[in-house]
Length: 330
Ligand SMILES: NC(=O)c1ccc[n+]([C@@H]2O[C@H](COP(=O)([O-])OP(=O)(O)OC[C@H]3O[C@@H](n4cnc5c(N)ncnc54)[C@H](O)[C@@H]3O)[C@@H](O)[C@H]2O)c1
Image (cartoon, rainbow, N blue to C red; front, side, top):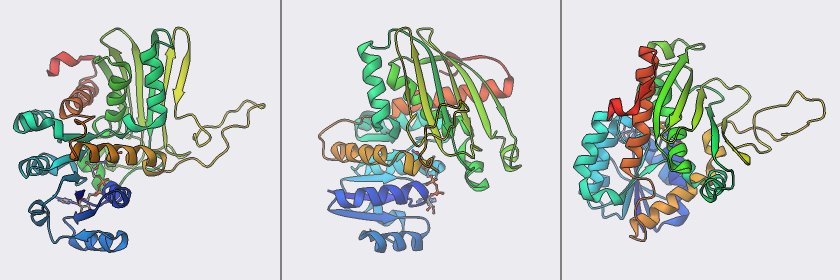
């Protein structure tokens, strides 16, 4: 299997390292050619001088981890070259560009996988099985959280699309995937304590959305860039018969103040790469199956659009300070 990787910054380099043992040949390109060469020599891959050169290679698939603004064009180039395409979320920076992309990809969409890695995390998978089996009864409340230990760079924030499109979009996707329901309505607020570059980018450093699913289930989705205790991603699923939580293990960055509780004790994760290493590996192995024609995309452009629309609704809600029906944006 011959796979290309475009963009080897934070997440792209991580993907390239995870892919290397699983493929025959790995070809790397980055806008910063020296970065591509350096990583290639470290992991036994081959760097090409620029992105154009990568798309003229004979490949089975391409993994796109360049900044979001470049995604639509790179996805189209990959599809047009006949490659299976894995692209990091979000598929495009705006709703209009996501819809335009879906139209351009057309009936080749089953060869395009978007990087919602939580679908491959063992905890979220176990929770989904319980929800599907009805083992929790009916769900009365969902509480999702995604917190960075420290904020990304000002440059990243400026191009990220904001906390709901960048962080909470993972929670919106996993709620849809896990419950099999769509989010129908949101009310979102944010605060911008911390570095000034959040406000300068029109973003917030902490966000909270109240969500209502199309079957009436209620939930909250919270995110922060300043969770000094550690990287914290959890989902509580509270049912009429049983309640479970994803992400509450020995590394959870929470400490109980109850005198009799001395757990969790392990060092918390500092970032998504250590917290989700297994999930990233599994999603890339699934992509190799897509590239080999053994399965259709397990996370499609339509899925990406459905999660993105919710994030977009949160931004409308936050700026207009009102509840927003998802149908307003459809
Ligand atoms: N699924 C996840 O958990 C997750 C985590 C982090 C980032 N992401 C997504 O991955 C993407 C990259 O994020 P990052 O944090 O790795 O960014 P980054 O800035 O660390 O890395 C981006 C890399 O792409 C290169 N680049 C820039 N423009 C390019 C172009 N046109 N063609 C090829 N290479 C180009 C840069 O030189 C850099 O090496 C973003 O879309 C982000 O939303 C997803």
